[in-house]
Image (cartoon, rainbow, N blue to C red; front, side, top):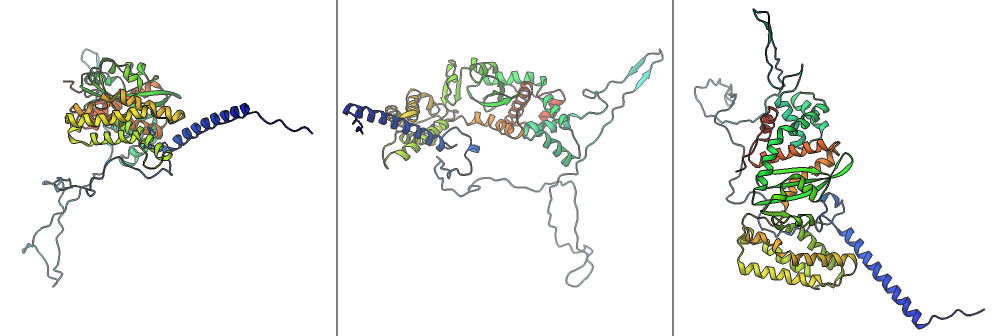
Length: 466
């Protein structure tokens, strides 16, 4: 039986090289899978709802304040106080003396203790019948009375009732079926789900055209605008919700496209020339009119992910470039002068140097595979966009994060999870226009329910843009 041939030296070298390449590829694959498994809302843009029940204990980037929970010394506080003129007064007088049994007629008054109870009145629906009379003139002609606006059916719901439906559905994000049951339980007003849906559709209709135009103009003329986008299922297909907002205005729209086509369709950002706050998504950089403030909250989460990777793969105490950037940014963000847009120039220069020096090291890191490529891309972006990350430190009124924009669309996602997809693009557009109306009225300290009543009365509130 012939003996098997021994491999040559060159064949062994080639085999070892092939195995080394395969090992490196597998290690990179393992690192990428570990990164995906380790991604949480703390170190990525994943929402907290995806963390699962086995999520690790939260590690906040905020420093302990040392203060006890609750109101702090000097805080005025709020409490339920008695009113000077109650609607009803009920007197509780003792009839007999508990000591001797004598009748107490009030001749010897021992004082009064007043205790007030705040209560809701018994709510009941009122029905108003409009009788439209027809009369005959002496000349023989017939003349009929004119019904008020909106009274055009044998039975219909008035502006306050329809405003309540729209408020619960679009203002409080309650599903249509539960809105109907809520109105039946609280007000004794049974309502069909189709009626609720019709009220929401009507509220987001053409009566808001002037409002939407004025809000868009107000945002475009503002010095600082926050922008964000998120996915939304409409008619079974993926669409994108686009938001542009300030401290006074909210504009939320939907479009089949996420990028510039969706932004341009909203009609705000293409002509904007102030400071645009966003999350460093590339299409925003194609807007050449505004200056940019990149969201530091997103950056901090990305840096935490890099630091977590180094903690898991490097020896204890080893230098981590992301940790240095993280620490330098947090010191700057927490500085009261920088937060007010008036950072000390020397302090700002020092923190900037710490960030850029660490980013240079990160751009040259040798972490293998896709994980390493992501880390190096992040470091290069930090170095190239450092001015856009630190603009808040020298601009009063500018925030370091884009949380304001995320708040505009966060509850839209919650509504999507609870109530499901929009069946038509027209319905989604109307719902988001109504959300813009309610959010803007709230920002300008107006009663949102009253604003809806005005809307159903044909007098939609419009903000002043000056």
